[in-house]
Image (cartoon, rainbow, N blue to C red; front, side):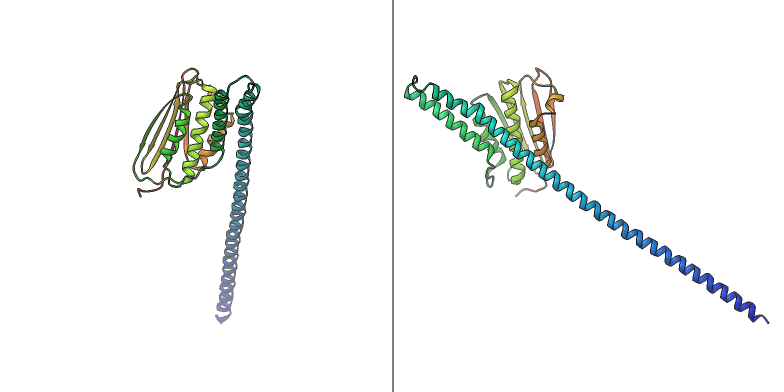
Amino acid sequence: MLYPENESTIVSWIWIGIGILFLTTAFIILLVTHYFEQIRKNKRKMIQLVRNAETECWESIHYLQERDRERLSEELHDNIISQLNIIRLNINTRNGKELNSDLKRSMQLVRELSHNLTPPDLNGIELSDFISDYLVQISKEVEVLYVNHTEQDILISGTIKLNLFRIVQELITNILKHAFATEITVLLRVSVKYLSLVVKDNGRGFPMEKYNKGIGMKNIQSRSRKINAVYKFKTKPEKGTRCIVFLTLNNTKI
């Protein structure tokens, strides 16, 4: 007469098993659903990050284009057009030798402007030589000391060369325009793993809060980000300015 009780117990355990199976299945479904929802969220985040990066990239490109247009306009107006206007005004009073000298000076300004705006072909050119050639031109206006400590056979990408050179140009342009310096020192040190660049002057310096808002600083920031470099300014009014640029090189000797 125990069979009904046994059957009742068996049925109870079956229902308990079914309940456990149901709960386990529901839990697994929830886990899988949560997993795929996280995948969808991460995918949306990645898409948004890519879109933000593309937007920032286009904004940077637009900014650099506008900056170059402004610089071109400024250089044309302040230097070249001004120089040609002087020639025009004095064409009847100066002799041929003087006019020829003025024209050569104007042509040199055009060449320098073209050199500054056109991305150079850096293949086969050492960074140290590239900077040295530029400083030779600058030395006609101010005393320049260039110290180069570059290990032999170090491979530096064209992107790093170009952006570092543009940083040097920006720094020296600002020195010539605003610092009233009589001496500029450029220190370049390149090893297998590291590269450091120091540009300093003996000019009047400036308050950092003022310079941080300028186009020149934005250009240096943009160029530094492109090559994963860090930089630091040290300056005080009437105490000169020092800019240090540092980056890690991911290569070995060739």
